Amino acid sequence: MASDKYENHEYDVIVIGAGGAGLRAAIEASAQGVKTALICKSLLGKAHTVMAEGGIAAALGNVWPEDNWKVHFRDTMRGGKLLNNWRMAQLHAQEAPDRVKELEAWGALFDRTKDGRILQRDFGGHRYARLAHVGDRTGLEMIRTLQQHAVHKGIDVFMECTITRLLKDGDRVSGAFGYWRETGRLVVFKAKAVVLATGGIGKAWKFGTNSWECVGDGVALALEAGAELIDMECYQFHPTGMVWPPSVRGILVTEGVRGDGGTLKNALGDRFMFKYIPEFFRAETADTEAEADRWYADKKNNRRTPDLLPRDEVARAINAEVRAGRGSPHGGVFLDIASRRDAEYIKRRLPSMYHQFKELADVDITKEPMEVGPTAHYMNGGVRVDADTEATAVPGLFAAGEVAGGLHGANRLGGNSLSDLVVFGRRAGLYAAEYAKVFKGTPTVDAGQAEALARECLEPFERSGGENPYAIHQDLQECMQTLVGIIRTEGELTKALEEIATLRERCRRIRVDGNRQYNPAWHLALDLQSMLTVSEAVTRAALERKESRGGHAREDYPKMDAELGKVNMAVRKVGEELTVTRERIPEMPPDLKKLLEGDK
Image (cartoon, rainbow, N blue to C red):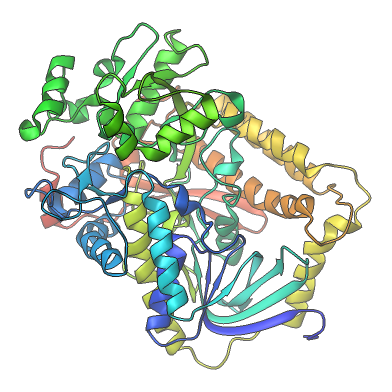
């Protein structure tokens, strides 16, 4: 391969993505003594993890001594409507406390109890107050801590570098191909093992909480390399995003507002969530407003307010109120904490929310309610991995964080994402390093493969067509928002597939002008390939799951189906086509099954 045409680097392990999972994976791989590189398409420290607000779920037992990993496991499985990989849920619940203590040892500054221990707050779907937090800026503190630790360890970091394809030597991964966003110069990374930690797919929807990085590139990279996806239909719409003004619609309003006492009300002033308590949670949820108020005043009875039901339940309830004509003036509902907490408490516990609404919406949340509504938020599914090692079906390829599926099942509980990052980021880094150590020979990259990828990457500059990537992205977002949103039907999903196919054809006619230096139109033209792939995967899996479960709600199949609750929808790429198959979930061992006794 001509050295003047490609910049070349060689490592034992490369980690693609520098959020919580990527940083933790790189730290662990480096600690195992292998040569490690961290690649991110933004600047180090600006990963989407910084936007996580509420806290890290871990059964530390600092607020409720009764809490333990078994209760956390049960909550996670119930929240995921039992579609979860039970082994991942077990490992996550068991190891999350140690990962939080590790962050503390590395310098993370958590809010404290009166006796100096890490404070924990309530969140939806968690039986006990379980989220370790730093006000409502927990993700930022996690990234700060992990970043400083990674830099301290001397890990090589390649910033503003986009990976467009994984390279393979036969069946196994041998590296990655990409380009520098600043110069457009092409780059090849040879590696014995690759960890994907690229985050989510939220930019496929019009209104969402995700930052510009979340285009599903890791999912597309894995599929193209031969990996499998699971549970892609179960995309999570967070119940509370901003709805006004239009310029900020979709921005996250942390669940911590409700965890600290906030309540949801419709235009009539009713606390409507009491009407929507599902039978699954009826036994341990306050049935009346008076009961809920007593819960806030004295939590010894440990009853959960319905405002803190799992996210899928709350999002559908809000959607139902708006569709019934009981929504707020701008198409949401009201979230009120001002009438329940004093101004000093709100500013201390929710500083980011106070400034966010004050600056972006001219709303003082210490005096008036917020307008909120469901917003595209999180990929519950993702690349299928082995629970213990995070290995994919492709030798040498590992995945962790939001890009990996299995842990959350049909719906993620708030706070489980941040503990997911460090629990499975560590495991991915550990086992990627072990794989690299026993790798036979050196990774090789076929020159012809790299040449083909280079032509594909630069093709938008050579075309004679006139399609605009921004127009195609806007049309894709409208399609997904309208047809593959919070409530779905077979007719709308079928129409979405037709529109996605049309958008693929239009993508083949995108022409990008100018040169490769700082060309955002070119970047988007390449990102659209990933967004179309993940959009099709979500839509095809949603068509196949003919029931409503967690983040997947079908108006034409409104109930859960017992048989479909025993299978994951697996997506593979066969030739140029995406296929969906039903694959039975492995049987849970008796000791774990016993923890769920009494659940329907």
